[in-house]
Length: 231
Image (cartoon, rainbow, N blue to C red; front, top):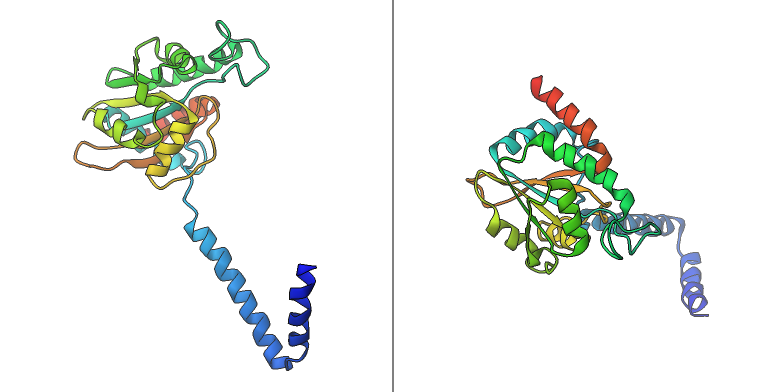
């Protein structure tokens, strides 16, 4: 009913226009539609890109900066058992038993990078603590701000970043989202076990967004990065 009340007068007005004016009206509508679409595209925050695909050219530099201790990594915990129809690793909460194999992939990847110059922090919740133990052999330090993180995630991380040491934060999707938004990004919820990489040199106050790696892409990405490093 409301639609007909609006469209009928508009159609009558359009039918009374000359051919020239009709063409002008159509062109104006097309321009307005294009401008609206362009504005929505321009204003939408960018997404963090995949280091195994479109951002693979960043891998050699990332490996160099890891050696310098300039990398910050946000790692989402492994698959939580209260959301999936699979048994828990232990007890009735935490991660699924089948996610142990994914944790092994991540442990191998971080081991290949080397952890001698790396600080590891994790949320104390069961799923993040179990993930940290699987991937980093219980090297991490429990930090409440890694689950109470919605407003100050970025600031809390930068306060704890030691110059010359990489920092890995084992945390939750909501915290990762808060971190991204503080940097002007808005990416889809990362998969379980996805790692997001950022760099911060000692003489800079700002983080550079590098990209992300899903757990099953580490081996190929690290091999590709090492090959590019060698030239």
